[in-house]
Amino acid sequence: MTRHVTFMTIDDAEHYTPQQRAAIISAYPAHEREARAKGIPVLGSGRIFPVPEELIACEPFRLPRYWPRLGALDFGWDHPSAAVELAWDTETDVVYVAKACRASQQTPAMQALTLKPWGEWLPWAWPRDGRRETLEGAGVALARQYAAHGLNMLAGHAQFADGSVSVEAGLMEMLDRMQSGRFKVFSTLLPWFEEFRLYHRKDGQVVKLRDDLMAATRYGVMMLREAVVDPAEFKTARRKAGQSDPLGAFR
Image (cartoon, rainbow, N blue to C red; front, side, top):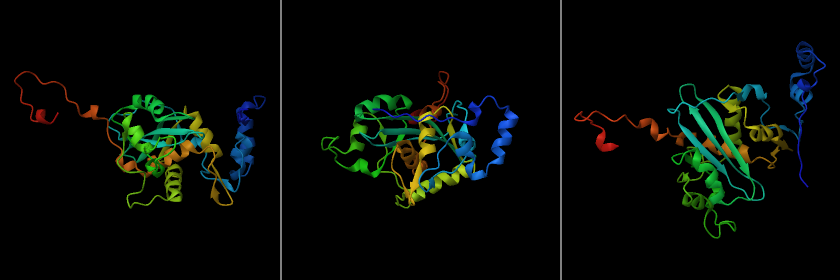
């Protein structure tokens, strides 16, 4: 038996004019607008990211090749494995979630087939449970399995620069970026927004259910300092015969 969540928004009520819909929404208290107008439920003791989607969603665009980029993984089996790609506009300090995928019961080999086309040069952040020798990994740490299949895994698990791995600190870093306009997500990444809407706390604790893309994104934000520019950006055009090339020895 499978489950499906369908969201109906006030925009689906086409018997209202746009002006009427805007008036109805403005009449609701600010903290109730997303629940009443968009059908986004109020769960547990509150959403982890109480931010309007309009504040973070953006239309997809071609990423400048000089922006540093980073992949991030959350390992899973019955609950999905998840991956995102972050691109960092360092001039404005805005992070973009440009790609996202999620799948259950896929081996590292199958995951690698999906992710390598994102760029074999792309560095990958991963959680500390990737160090464990798991049953799924037949005694080999998951991070090493992914590396063996061609992903450019970072040397150590996701952590802040001081070595800490606080979940709350990671969530607050994401929330701060969202609220300050420094975190954007391509609007076409529907599974990412599905998790974003349902990500919540119960009795003050993070509910770890359908949070795979959220976790992968958090690991990426924690390790943003490891983002790198596509090496193709540094390739220079072939010089004319006889022309000096002082960098030739380093290419």
